[in-house]
Length: 194
Image (cartoon, rainbow, N blue to C red; front, side):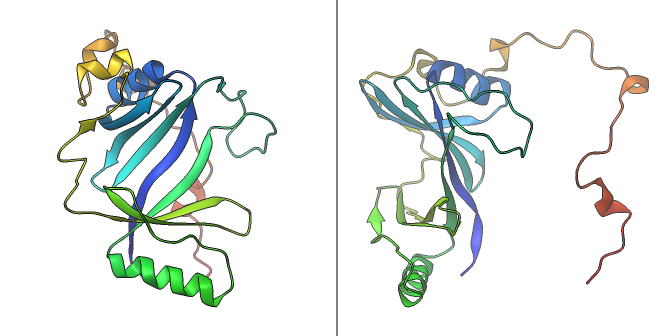
């Protein structure tokens, strides 16, 4: 099996318009698809040539409480599932057979129109989706909006609108640009143990 990356990371929001403005207009990801009906939406943002972020909009979903990165929390969440993209349809069958041989639950292969998918859980009960992209329905090349009642911000189209945010008036001068060591900075100067 050869993975190409993350097909989509599924997250949740209670405010799709704010989410579109942040991810499309501020961060610069294209909004490439939307599905919805009253009380429910799901929108896809292009993260890279083979990667997307998906946001579900559900009534009564609340933002997470602020927390430091990597610190466990309890309560509301925004993570739904991790989707890994495989290179070929045959890879889905290999995963399906391997999970069955190991007696680990895995779903049947489902056709979602633009992808075919398998679903399971890792040992930590993290929901996993394995996906193969249908080349006949490429949402990255041909964005689609099928939401019956699109979010107002979605009407302005799939492409980022940087003018929706204030422009930079005073960039940080080069002499003030400090980069502080963070987790993983030791990769540059520690000897590999392998």
